[in-house]
Length: 298
Image (tube, rainbow, N blue to C red):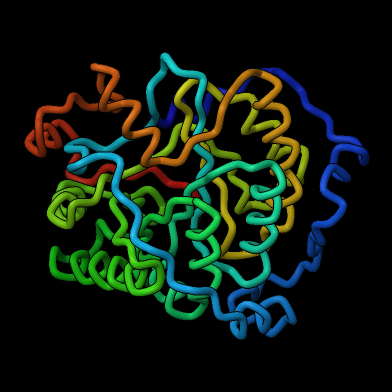
């Protein structure tokens, strides 16, 4: 998996000023202040005041969770899932949502529980715009270091928070840092959560620049790809600015964008598995090391 994620082609991609002006109505914040979770910006105040209605519960696409961790989708279909971790964030999540809405793209947000509680209206907006919302734990710990009871608490409290805001209980889960073991996986499965990882990332949390983020994503993009980006957890203006470039380039290549539930449905109905493991039940995790860790950030 590490070698797969480390293979980056020699294709270069340069974004010019006209590309970044595709969405002139979007105000991309370029402050270097990384203390975003404590922001008191006008954007944050708007989302705290605005009262979005609680949407009706939506039906689930698949009836039961996957019994193996999913790193990518159906490799026979030209579809890609955009996913965003560590939100909701009062500054950058609205920017990401504006881009997605402008392109009529549906994505998946893996939200942190305590931030769902802090910014429920942003989560409602994610849901109302047709995006999928996943469980990303309550406080973003390395779950593989916790007891089974601690893991369960992190998952249940976050699912409860998301359900209270959206009216729909999440069916997908991404472990923080991509770190999980058999116990984490079993607790997620017990909560009827499919464990979702990724096979395409830009390491945007290092703020390497808009062009670098776009180039890394585009070099790794494949059929059934799960793209990892971030809308929270730090300075994410570069990610928001790179998003129009990524979407436009992938659409030009013939890819369509799907949510993770749709991607799972397309795996389930394809007759083949999509994982480093075969779908033989939780016992198949015995082939893993005691702790399987896929690091996405320090």
